Each structure stands twice: as structure tokens, then as C-alpha cells.
Image: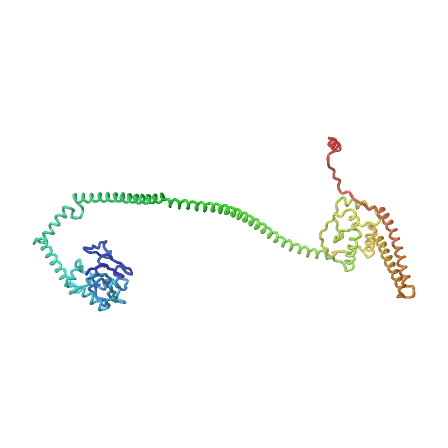
Length: 520
């Protein structure tokens, strides 16, 4: 039997971990590692695999269990004349034992049959020939052992010592083992001190070994470098041979043409990309500009909303302010007078004539220059200028006294407004006469038509009224024409200005300069 691999899991210091020793070869195999690294643990697990049943929990099995608990598992691959097998055992919880054929993967045996298979491999157990493999390094007294176990180990050690001594004496021709040991110690003392420090010859050998090793490493590096260079040269020669081939040259030319076409297409695409990027930047600028305009528009819209709210508030205040605190008949009279003055005085439509005025010096001089017997301030202001503004004033209730404008005075003021500053009433007489004449003419035509068709009455009331309308209209027209002459005379006497000079603007070069420039 030969052991080719050993695997452990959850054994002693390898709690919840696994460790594997693979590739155990022919001859002597040395397991070398630092102290407390798990060498003895591996041999104890191997000893338990071959000599401890999976169903028992003796001291050797308990020693395999780590301090954290768990179920130790040990597995070994072996080679025998009958084939290659894998032995697996798990102790404590979920304990089992099985034998698997490595070549076919078939389960050969398990449980007690697996134990019998292992017992057949190690005939005699720990006290037989196979027990020589498990000689410990001596009894430490730490482990708890029975007297029988200690006696068995003593017998094994004695058997091993006698066997080794006999073999040595047989090889050396009868010399004692002690002499061999003495010779070995003498040779060892010539090479090293008792503490293991090398002496001169051994130290020189070690130094020579180190030099040779350094030289070997240097030569190995040179060899590696030369080998890489040789590989590169071989590749270059191969590539050169391929380049010299006409077929390869033709393929290269075709590849160059293809690459040139792709390069030209890439250049065209690059130009398109540049134009697209420029258009994109322009679009970004336009978008940013539009965003700025949109922001300004939104701000203006918000401002307009605020202004609209202010206007609404102002309109409400204006309505409140324009609400005059007078009797209904006086308010109606004011409304009628304002509408009448829109036509008679050519007042701006919607302009309200109020008792509060603020006029320029020129307008004040024109008003003061009027010497008519019936002055009306608003009429004289409207004769002087049409550049008029207005502000809202609040009409509060009179806090003291009573108004001096009685009905008689208000009628006189109204007559002054209608008569003193316009000939419109006279022209209205003319228009009324024309209308009456037109109606009378239509009446005469209707009377004649009815007479001719025998449909009208026999008495002459219709003809009389038509004739009266015609002659009355003619009288009114004549009165209007006479009133037009009288009105013009009245306006001339009333000194109504036809126009006013607001400002004299002087400019241009002197007359002499103009003449000079013309003659030049």
C-alpha cells in the first residue's frame, strides 16, 4: 500500500478549515514546516484514519476535535496492487466511513465494510508490522493514556530499535551502532560547532555554494534573456519571410488601399462631426439665448401681472374717487354737461371738467387776456390748448358750509358754456331746418302720389302739413345762415384766438452765410 494524498477538514487547529497534502511521491517524502504548523496533526489524523473506527470516540479521536467543536473529517488516497482507492472517515456528528474506487468513482464499501477494508490493509493493527510507522517522539505525559496504551507504545519503540540496530549491524558487517554514531558525531564536529555554527571548511563550502548559486542565477538570467532575444529573432525572420512573399505584398497593398479609403471616410466623417459640433454649439447658444429671453419674458409676465393687479387696484380707487358726493340730479347734470362740452368745446373725450386746475404760464396769460362779459375758465383753457392731462381726485363730503352753486347759477353757467364759446346751437338750427325741409318735401311727394292714385283723403290736411314743413324748414335754414354770420361776428368780438404761438425755434446759418454758400 502506498499513500498518495492526505486531506483534513475541521481537525484540531484547522477548525472550520481544510488542509491537503498532495503529490506524495516514491522514496522518502519529508514534511517540513515551522513548529505548531500542523505536521503532527497530519500524522495523528492519518493514524486515526487507519487505526481508529469511525463509530468510536477514544482519546486519539477526541484529540482530533478542535476546541470550537465540530466533526473532524480525514481522507486519504492510496495505491494498492488491486487499484487506487480513497478512504474517507468522519467522526462524531454525521459519522461515516466509505471506500471509493478512484478510477471508476464507484462506492466500494461503507460503514463496517469500510472498516474491514482498512483492517485488511494494516494487518495486525498498531502492534503489527504496520505499527512501526506510528512511533511517536516519546511519551510527553500531557495526553491522558491508559496503561495498556503506554505499554503498547513501549513495545513498538523497542521493536523498532531492535529492528533498526539489526539492520545497521547487518549492513556494517558486525560493527556496533554506537561506533557508527560516534563516527558520525566526530565528522559532524569537524564541520560544525555543538551549537550548529559552520566551521571553516563547511563555511567555505557554504560560501562557495552561495557564490555558485549567485552565478547560476546570473547565468540563468542571461540564458533567459538570450532565449527571449532568439525567440524575437526567430519571429522577426519568420515575419520577414512573410513580407518578401508576393502574395503577402499584394495583400498588404490591398490592406493599405482599404485603410486609405477608411481614412478618407474618417476624414469626411470628422468634417461632418466638426460641422455638427459647430451647429450643436450654435444650437446651445440659441437655446441659452432663448432661455434668457424666456426668463425675461416670464419676469415681464410676472411684472405685468403685478402691474395689472396695481392697475385693478388703481381702477378701484379711481372708481371710488370718481364717485361724486352730490345729489342725483346734480350728478346727472354734470354728466350731461361733460358730454355736451365734448362736442361744443372740442374737449378730449372722457376728460372731466373739474374745479381744480394746474395750468402753464402761457395758458394763464391767454385766459387772463380775455375781456368777455361771461367768462368760463374751462372754455378759455380749451381755446388756448388741447395738451391736457388729468389726475384722479377724491370727492369727499363737504366738511363745512353749503355749495354756492344754486340752480339759477348752474343754469347760467351752462348757458355760458353753450352760448359764449361756440356757434353750434345756430348750426343746429340750420341742420334742423334742412331736416324739416327734407321731411316736408317727402310729404309733398307722398300727397301727390296718393292724389294721383286716388288713395288719399279728400280734404287737404296732408298737403297743408307738408307745405308748412317745407316753409318752416326754409325759415330755419335762413335763420341758421343768419346765425352763422352773427356767430362769427360774436366770436370776433369775443376775441377767440384762431391759433396760439407756443414756442419760436430759431435755427440755421445766418443769411449772409447762406448767400455765400449759394453763390459758391
